[in-house]
Amino acid sequence: MYWWHHVESTMDGGITTSVNFWYKAGPTPSHIKYPLTAQQKVAVMRNIERMLGEALGDHRQIGPLLNCITSGRYTETNDDVEDSCTEINQ
Image (cartoon, rainbow, N blue to C red; front, side):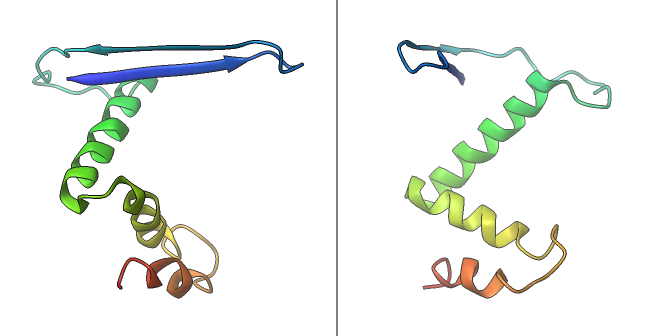
């Protein structure tokens, strides 16, 4: 089961429109073509978010955990790694 949402606002701040819905996805194909499409990437992200939310038991821990995983690994310096991971390790 997947959840999709999108929000758009006018530049002047007058109108904001939100669209969301739940849907069931088909089976995983036997052969995956690369590069992944934008829709496939969104599905991967949502599945990871759901898995982490269930594993951590608190959705507020997802962002700090992902920051801890990526800090230093995909950046130029490791200066902020300890700061971003401190709250995870408490």
